[in-house]
Each structure stands twice: as C-alpha cells, then as structure tokens.
Image 1 (tube, rainbow, N blue to C red):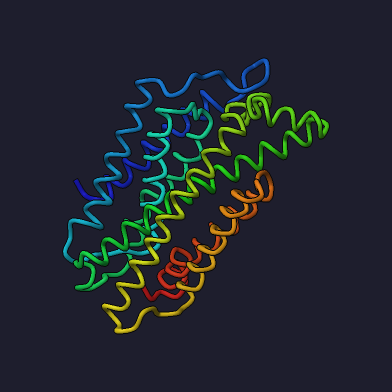
Image 2: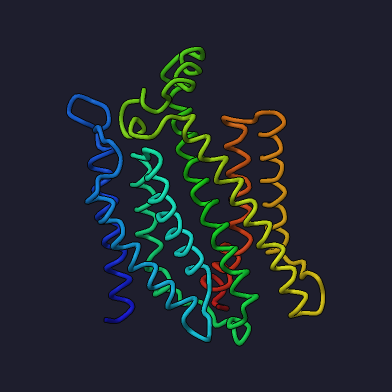
Length: 293
C-alpha cells in the first residue's frame, strides 16, 4: 500500500475519532451542558490505538528505518502530535481527561499527512549517526511534551476566562479551588478540574524541561563533533536558548513564588512559541516559503 494512502487513512481515522469525542464529550445536550462521560471506554481506548499504530509506523519508516534520514518541519509537527496523542492515551489511565481528546486528535489528523506533502530534505550521512538520532529523539520528546503543555495552557485560559466572566471574583476563586471546569456549561464543562489541569501542566513542563536540557546538551556535543567548535550560534540556537530560559524562569517562579493562573499560562505560551520558532518555524520558511528544503 502506498505511503500516501496510509497517511490518508491515518488522518481520516484521527478525524473520525475527534468527531466522536466532540460529539460525546463537547457537544451540548438538549438541556444544556456537555454530555456526561466517565473517561475512555475500552472500545474507545482500543480505537485510538489504530491510528496511533499506523502513524507510529509511518514515522518509524521515515525517521529510523532509512539510512538516509529525511526530516523537516512536517516530520517535526507529525512526530509532536503523534507523541501528544500517545501521552494523552497513557495519561487517561490515571486521570479522567474527557474533553482533552477532541483538540489533540483533530490536530493529529492535520499533522499526520504533512510528511507526504512536504517530504523535507535529506540529512546526508550524518543522519545515520547515533549521536544525531539521539539528539533528534530528545528534541521530539521535548517538543511533544511542550505541545501537550501548550494545549493544557490554552484550555486552562479558556476555562479561567469563562469563570471570571460568569461569576464574581469570589465565586470564580471558589470554583477554581473546588471543581473548576466541571461547573461550566458547554464544551468546557467536559474538561477535568482546573487544579488537575494545573498539576498536569507543571508536571509535563518539568519533564519536558529536562528533555530540552538534554537536547541542548546533545546538540552542543554533536556540533563540536561535526564543526570542531562547541556551538553554532544561529537563530535556531538563539530561540532554543530563549525557550530554555523562559521555562527555567517559569519553574523557578512556580517553586519559589507559587506562580499559577494567567502568569503561568503566559510564560508557558511564550516559551512554546520560542521553541516552535527554533526549528519548526525556521524549517517551514526554508522549505515552503523559500523553497530551499
């Protein structure tokens, strides 16, 4: 079966599942509010594994199997969203994450076929080296966790904004401390409580920060082996370092000053945008806008 067909089937399966979870979790009931759901059902959990398996096989064939590695912005986005859905699948074993599936699966449906449309460039013989692939795996894992953190941050911002508009300041604070999103009507009412989302957010940011640190460390070691100097200081390195500093300050602010709410959300989104510009944004400009893939 041609790869383009597998890409299309994978995207379609993600899209069907995104519609299913929107219809069963986000879509309003006739009497108002989101439909009740008690976490992933066994059939739903099994169904998600189908596109995950297809998507993972495509990424393996593109990134790990060939001797000549091709990797561009499309592979980066596709890998990020595949791992994002995979992490959500595992997280749902321990938390009720109803309401998180529709946006994650919809984004995966958009990202899955991108490598077939934008194949990227060959990395040359360096792509076969263990050092390069180790650096690449660390970077993809870090990007993926930060992608999930960004989705959490956006949804938390929407919930908090709705709470502030629908209740008095005292009522909103009480809702945040009690059951947060569960008190909202409509799609946002299907989300887990805000305190649960917040705990997950900082847990993921902490793990992703460690992976980002390892990514920068392996990048420095790889650059020294390749170019004979510790680091090539270009726009990609600059944005990666700025992102690292942003998330370091966010974690320090959380630990020492208890940052939360809008302050934490702004820092999360700022750090993610910088990280996105570090590779995905620059490769998109080179491959698509400038045609220099």
